[in-house]
Each structure stands twice: as C-alpha cells, then as structure tokens.
Length: 180
Length: 361
Image (cartoon, rainbow over all chains, first blue to last red; front, top):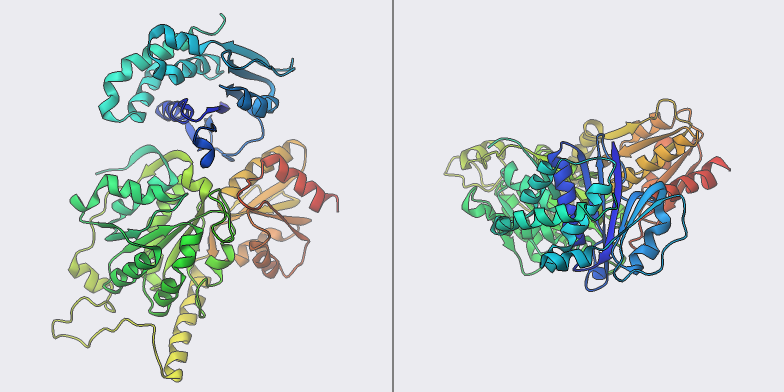
C-alpha cells in the first residue's frame, strides 16, 4: 500500500492540521508516514499545501510530481495541481468557490460541498475535518476509524481533547458527502 | 523512560533528541527554517527535569561563544541556526576547532547568498566541509536525510565530537527541518556528572583541586613553532577521522549502469527518481554520502567502478561534485544537476537531467 496525497487550499483553512491528523492516523495504523508542508510567506493569507505519504514501506521522496489524490479547496490550488493527478487517480474539490474544472477523463473527479455541510453542523471551524472525512472515504487504503480517533488525540493538544467527539462527527459527515 | 514512537518535524526531533542525549546546554537565536529547535526546547522546559540549560542569546555570535564557554568545561553543548546565522558563527567555530573543543552545531540550510530565501538549499556544503571560518580545520559533517536521522545524528554528532575533540555539524536543510515523519526517540540518558566529565575530559577546565597543572583552553599561540605543532596535532586528528569515520549508504548500486549521488533530503528525491528510471528500464543506483566530511572517498570510488556515468544532484550550483571528481580522479563522466535559490527539483526532473546530461551524451 502506498498513498501519495496533496491537500491544497487557503492559509487558515486548516490544510496543514488536516494533513497532520491524516499522517498521525496512518502512524497509529502502523504505516510509514511523511508530512511535507509548504512553509513560508505564502501561508499568510495566500495558498498553503501539504503533501502526505502513507506507505507500508520506507518512503523515498517527500517531494512529488504526481499524486494518487489531490484535494483542492480553492481555484488556485485546483489550477496548480489538477494536472498532477496520476492517471486513474482522484481529484476531490470543494464546490464552493471552484468553478473551472480540468478537462480530464482519465481521473475520478469528486465534488464535495464541505462548506455547506460545515454550516449545517454549525461548526465552521470543523471544515477541515469534513474534508478529511471525504478524503478518507475516497482513499483506496481504508484507515480504521479507531486509528483516526487516535490520530486526532495525538494531533490535538490536551486542552482541546473535549472537541474530539465533534471532530469525529465532522469526519463522519465528510465520509457521507461522497456519492455512494 | 523507554523508546517512544512519535510524529514530528526534524527541528522538533533535534530538540527531543538533545534532551534525551543528556545535553547540558543549548544556546541559540531564532531564524527560519529552524526556529522550532529553540521553540520546542523552550516548551519542553528541560531545565526543570534534566537540568539542561536552554538560552536564547542576544545574537548568533553570542550563542556560539556561549557554546565555546560551555564546551571548555567539558559540557555537552550545542547551537543551531540557518545559513546566514551560521555565517555569523564562523569565527566562534574556528576558535573552537583551534582550541579542540567538542560541540554540536546544527545548520538547517536555506537559500543564499546573503539573507537569500527561507526555502531549502544545500549551498553551504563548501562552508561546512572546507572550513567555513579561517585556518586549517575541519568539522565532522553529518547530512541527515530523514527526521529519524535528525534524532540519531544528535547522539552520533556529540559522540564523535567528544571522541576527537572537534566540533561536529549536522548539515540539514529546510526540507528535513520542516517535514514530519515517524521517529523513534531514544531512551533518556542522564546528563554526565561532574565526576564523569572530569574523567572523560581531562583537558577541560573543571577545577584542578590542587591535583594537576592548570588546563588552559585557547586557540592563541604566538610562538610559530608551537603553533605549527598545534596544527600538526589537528591534522593528525583529521587523518584519523578520515580513516575511521566515513559513512555512506548505497541503494541498487550492484547492477547499476548509472549512479546518482546526492546527500540529505535530495537523496530522497533521487531515490524516487531511481524508482521512476528503473521502471523505464534504466539501471540506476543511488549513493548517499552520510558524512560529508570526512567525504566517503573509498565508497564513491568503489561505487563508481564499472559505471557509465554519475549525476551529482544538489540544491546548489555544484559543490559536492568537486569531491566526487577528486575521489574518482575523473575516471568516468560526472555531471551536475542543481536547482538554486530555494527551488526543489522533482523526481521526474532528476530523471530527465540524468537522461540529458549522462545517458544521451
């Protein structure tokens, strides 16, 4: 098993944290993991992205040309990474704010309305967890939910641990956003 | 406490590793992309547990001279910075080499010259391996390619620097510093007692208690014949290190027709490039120098035997390639591929460079 994933969006959307929880969940499932952020001035209000690799074996490059899954949360990110989905791979995008889609018929394109779902549960800050849920559902590698919970526990400081049930619900909601 | 498996950044991992090694003191000054070293140490507050000192100095120059002071007393002390800050420390590093003081210095390289950029680079290879400051000296230079090696090289760097009484440097870059990976942290080791330090470092200024001659730590010797002796002693030490300490890693070199040589995080990108090339039927191997000084000359010479060509990939305009060419006496073609100013090459880019610069030539 190997999943090469990039999550890209605006700084402040929780892209890096989402990647961290995904990576920690993989670690809790006994996988090799690498989390490589974009760091620097682009994080201040601009775009931010994080590459997460989960694998059974030792991971080579933390920097990639092509991804199994691209998660794009704004138009700039989609424009930048949609051509870098491997043939047969998956592109997940949030329908709010993204209007121009790539013309590719060799990949699976999954629209999710995570923003709307987030408002439905009344916790806009859980947006990234809704997206994470959709991503987990779209992955070939099925991460057991108990290990995602462990990943949450490890990633969040203890003072925020009372929010784990809420985040868990948001992840569950995200899983259900995928067309069955 | 026992070993622990965690997910963390290379910079954070160094902080944890230092405390667990039994480091006595860290003196630093913040600079991207390595500020998490100091930040993590401050948040872990080791002064309340192991007694390790953590101090944000007023400048890089102050920090390295605090390291000089701590090292003079036989303590295991360290500093960290990124390229422009490491330049500021060079005077202190040269003094420490001259005074034969052990210490650990971490450079998480960013693009230069000057203030440059905060993105990753490997352009300080010359500075780290050829001296950096003034005078005939070397540092032991370790190049980590993973977060786990950031942990492991703290202990290795300290051990080697005490063994040979010379400063050691971990030469990392923004990628290894900023990325998170699985790490196994070693068990906690208690800091050495005063008695243990006196035993391990008979040269240190630990107080003579009327039993021995004064120990003087200095790099100054005005008598040229004596200064030449000092230099000969250093050179002897360096020859010993060159003989005993070169380290490198090889992947798929046995059946390879071509060789990629890269250090640090770029070796990881090259490992992926190697996978892509092999899928295309190109037989490529990877050789990764782990010690940049001493440079693994024998490893590279043997690795190059029977190969059609070498591509050296670095985040600079061509620095380690000089040591490769010297090691193999230009017996086969060696070309360089590098990106500058903080740009990171992709694995495919490396394969294309190999095809264009080596295979199609």
